[in-house]
Length: 186
Image 1 (spheres, helix red, strand yellow):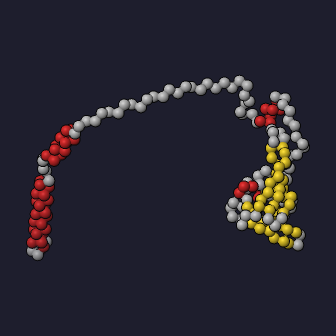
Image 2 (tube, rainbow, N blue to C red):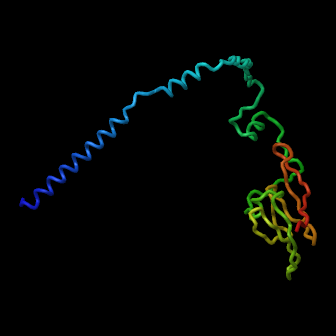
Image 3 (cartoon, helix red, strand yellow):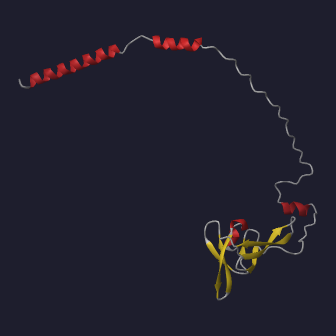
């Protein structure tokens, strides 16, 4: 180092020493052992009047339930097998039953309550009904189409309603027909 670099080195060391001294003085000023405000607050809290302790809630006695499965059907066996195994009469009622081998139509995925008739359209093959499903899609149906979860077959379409016949379970193993209709709603 030349003579020019020596004063610069001394001034840097002096600046660092002064900075450390000021930092230590400030740090020493933080060491106050005065806890009088904290002690005063603790005294105030201890001096407050103590209230009564609330009694514990009353313990309710729960009577245990004892399960007695005698005379009940096995919940792990299907209902039809249970009745046939027990020798119960599994009649077909009036011989009505749904055709489970046919391919289901789109509107059979919706319950009849969620479908709305919104109009009709006359085409060359006859009168078609317009049905709005709960997903907002409008479907075109005609006599012979199926809709609803109970195998509902459309038997008549008029300008203000669609009539259908549903096949619903009556007793285990038997079915019955019931009439249903959708009235024009919009």
